[in-house]
Image (tube, rainbow, N blue to C red; front, side):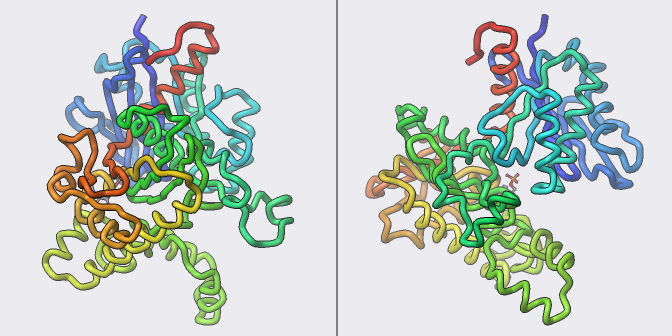
Length: 403
Ligand code: AMP
């Protein structure tokens, strides 16, 4: 029988599906649903010609049903999957690692929904859909927060009344844990070390951005907090702001829900440039002398440099600084401009290696003079989810673990 792992990643209005060979963990198919719950919802699968037919306003469940049907009809998915892995954004303090989903787990994910109202409910709808589509297949939840459960109190507590943490769970949770833990494994492999003895600073720079200090394999500090709004400048999210802004803007008549929208959807690179949240377009605009775009990139890189410096406070030694995510993997300009701010710390990159994103140097882009290695490593969160799903499904059957 085929050993296929289905990976389901439900975003607020998107659905990413991927199939992996459960033995080799090679990706065999990917699909994407977009603008879900909108009139122009659309989906397609790589290797299948044309769009997958979706009803107007298709929900995550409808998209999942249509896309898995198309995978089966095309032969990309033979029979039923061996296991299904779900990305779940918020696991609160309940989950330190991936788990097989049962009623209790489902309930705990539901309880965390107040901490991630845009994400946990759609993650649950993905879980419920595959549970009813494939009733006898093990479903596994892989959490974005789980890897950061090793943060020490000095890194996760806010300096607010302690009862907020005790009674309401107000603390820093951290996100992008699946990607940061993958960076650890990959960096350790490339450096010829074991993950448990490796210490890195991992910068995940995509539409959402976060940075993590990993000390001897464990997350020791990270830039995102109670929600994924804290920390670095992002595509349309502000990252850190002075909390005094809330009072000030209230006095100007800006309502709280309006401010929430502005900080999440109209700030960051988009807010600064007034043009776009897309770093590639921003770099093009900057090259044509568009001043607000130049400044947006400068703020992005400066804030990132400050955070790299801050992450040093959690480490005893540094094996490598790692860049990943759409921007981290592709933008030589951002990497160069960021590290230009950190000459005092001894980071130095080689122009040519940086321009090739380390493609021919096993990811290394540092110069011979650099005090620390600097790596560019493509992230692959789906593969981590597939690996965890395969591992837990096999463990529940009592056989061997895949490579
Ligand atoms: P992600 O969320 O990881 O898919 O990353 C999306 C971000 O990566 C967007 O801001 C893209 O503009 C950015 N990106 C992708 N390719 C490039 C590139 N070649 N140069 C600069 N930014 C890029």
